[in-house]
Amino acid sequence: MLLRVFALVLMLFINTVTAAESISRNACDGVDCVSPVVVLDSATKVEGENSLKIVAVAPCRVTVGRFSGTDFDNFTLKTTAKIKAELETGVVVLETLVKSKGGFYFSRAMDQQIGPKTQWQKVFTRFFFKEKERPDEIFVNLIIEGNGTVWVDDINIEKEKLPTMSEK
Ligand SMILES: [Ca+2]
Image 1: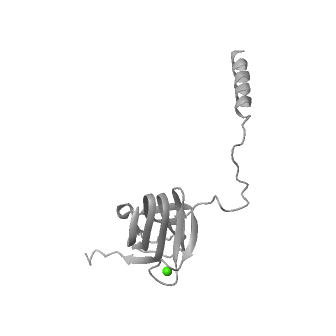
Image 2: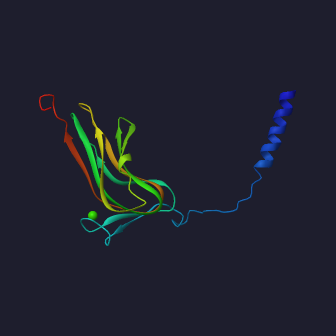
Image 3: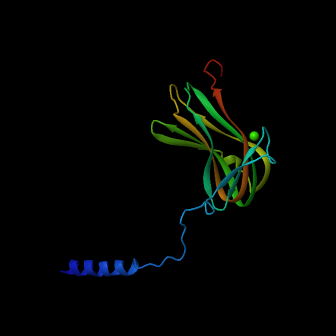
């Protein structure tokens, strides 16, 4: 009996709470509210014709490079990128995200954070692969922990052979 009364009170409470009034709405007919915005920038770059300019109004993670996997055999995957920041707040961190056997694994350059205001700087991450491991896909991401503008250019994926016991 007590349980029934409790259930009735709970239902009345839920009905009262769900009588909400919309105060703002995004009909998703445009991209004005989308962040970050990524555009090509031919004026601010370190190589080639453009860089990627990312304008974020809120903290976010954005993929700026996507590479197919390769066979690794006792190699280290080194990702390098050049980054420039004009953030209002916070920093930007380079991240390598590896998709392998259905899972995602990351390496972040936490010791090389860029920002809030920094000129072009080269940063890197390292990812160690054991023998016969093969990443399906490699993603290069920027984690923007703040808001403002970030540029990225000249992203490279390198394979570094680890020294063998006889080379050490
Ligand atoms: Ca470029």
